[in-house]
Structures are given as C-alpha cells and as structure tokens.
Amino acid sequence: MFRRNGEKPATTKSSARRSNGPGFRFGTWLRLHGVDIITMLLAGVAGLGIYFAPPAYSRYFPIRFQDGEVIYPEVAVPMQRDLVPIWLAAFLAFFTPFFFFCLFQFRLRSMEHVFTTTIGLLKSLITAALFQVIIKCLIGGLRPHFLVVCAPQVPAGTVGEGYQMLYFTREVCTGDPKDINDAVESLPSGHATAAFAGFVYLALYFNAQLKLLSAHNPAYWKMLLFMAPILCALLIALAMTMDGFHHWWDIAVGGLIGTACAFVAYRMTFASIWDFRFNHVLLPRTTSLFMRRPSADAGALTFGYGLGDSGQWPFTREGGWGDEKEVSSGAPFDASAMGGGGAGMFGGSTGARTRGNGSITHNPHAAENV
Image (cartoon, one colour):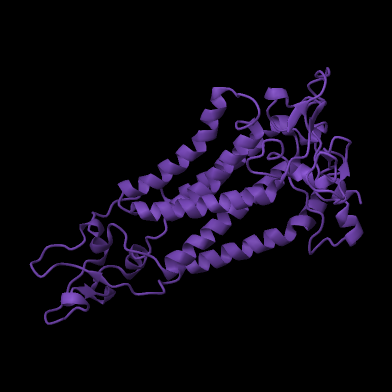
C-alpha cells in the first residue's frame, strides 16, 4: 500500500536535494567494500587469463559433401571487419551508465550513491565477462566465418570421421592458429554479454530514479529514456550478425547472461528491482572482512526506509516524490514489511527503527557513526 498523508509542505529547492551528509567517509566506505573490489580485480585477472587461453576442446566439423557441396554455408560467411570492436562495447557498457550516475548527482548529491552504484555496475560487467569467457573456452562454437579463417585443405588420402567420413578437426586448417582459436569460440557473444550487463543495469536504474513503473502515470519521455539502454544493447549485439562474427543464438545466450548479471547486481545494490517504493534506495553494508562489528551493533543497522528522509528520495519529483509527508506502509514480502510495524506482514523486530504506520527509517551513514 502506498498513500500520501496531508498536503505537501513548502520546501526550498536546496532542502529537497540530497547531500553527502556529515557521516560519509571514503575511508570507511572503502573498508566496507574493499573485499568486493579485491574480488572483482581477481575475477578480472582470471577472466583475462581464460580469454587468452586456447580452447579446451577441439570441435569436429564437416566441410563438404562427397559431391563437393558445402555442408554448412552458415559457417562460410566472408570475413569482415567487426562493426563494433569489443573494447568499444565494453567502454560504452561502463561509461554510459557511469555518465548518468554522475549526471543524476545534480539532484541526488551523494558520493556514496555514485561509488556504490558504480560498484554494482562493475559487479554486473565483471561477472558477465567471467561467465562468457569460461563458456567460450570450454564450450565455444564455430563463428559464421570459420571456414574462411580455417582455410581447410584435406590431404589426399586423408579420411574423415563420423558418418560417411565427413567430419574433420582443426588439423586440416591452414589458417593462422590465433585466428582459428578465435573462430571456434563463437558462443556466447562477448559483445552481447557486456552490452546487456551494462545497459540493462542502466535501464533498471532509470526505472527506479524516474519512477516509470510506479503509482502514477509518468511523462512519456521517461519511457523513451528507459528503453534507450535496451535499444543500445540490441544494436551493439545485433551488429555482430551483420559483420559475420556471431550467430543469433550466440547473441541470445550472451544477452541472457548479461541480463541475469545486471538483475542480480542491481538487487544486491538496491532494496528492490520492481517495487517502486524502494528500488532507488541503496542497501546498507554494516560489516565486512576489513570492518568487523559486534553482532549487536550490526543488528541495529538492518535495512529500513522512510519517505520523509530527503536523503532517500529518488531523482524524480513527479508523482509526489519529494513530499516529506509521504509514507509507505508494510506490504507482504517487501522490505518495509520486515520492520515489525503494525502494517507489516511479519511480527517482531529486526532491529530497524519503525514508525507507527509500519514505515521504517534508515540512516545510510549510520554504519560510520557507530
């Protein structure tokens, strides 16, 4: 349930904006997230090592029927220059969302928001990249231009394997070994994986900050902005079918990996994905390997949220957001329901501070003031 109580009070523009807050300290934030940063660096190094490793499996492939006809013309596509280099896809997947994280600080004004949201984006991108290089190395597949790169020449008297002796291994290839290694690692598309990992995360961020899918009918430009990252991801991914680097199924698998990582990373960072009341609220981190706390102190810092706290408002001011008298009542399976308030589903207390209507308040910098 989402309701408004009373009329909107008169507020100044400055009071409706979030500030860094006196409690924010970069050193404390770094201690809380340091383990994640180290883990991401290790995952990135591992991903690079796997990326440059040779394929783990030598795949069999047919070349021609006995009458000389090419068996699979879909892997005989001419070799072309890639329309979108992989470095450019990765660059856009990171810096486009990061640009909007910074741009939204025009109103949010929170360094904690920038740092933590960016960490979430990096978790999505690095995890997706690691998954796709592992699958490429262990499973892979033939690129559309494989036969061009392979340049197979079957010596006279050489007999293939399988039915009617039609299948051969890369031993019959005469092309550059490095190009052949790349040509047998088509599945999944790294471009699609990176694009969807970054741009789907950005789309979820737009939905949360602009309250597109919420309790009011938003402006149409918000829908266009929400869909723009999805369009960008599709354009980057589908371009790989035009230049002969990927099949459609490579792109589909890469898109699924990237989207899954974006959803998980976003939900790890924010209180919800679709619940418009909370999907813009950063989840607190109270302890880490580099910053241990007594269990009693950590329990007092569980998630909570109060719409009257201007430090927890989203970017948008439409639909009543920014009204200090806004409140949210607990509903089954949402974050506010776990605070022990009368309107929530679960009784008892989780250590969060509650108001009479079941809404919960949380100081995002409380971890630094304990």
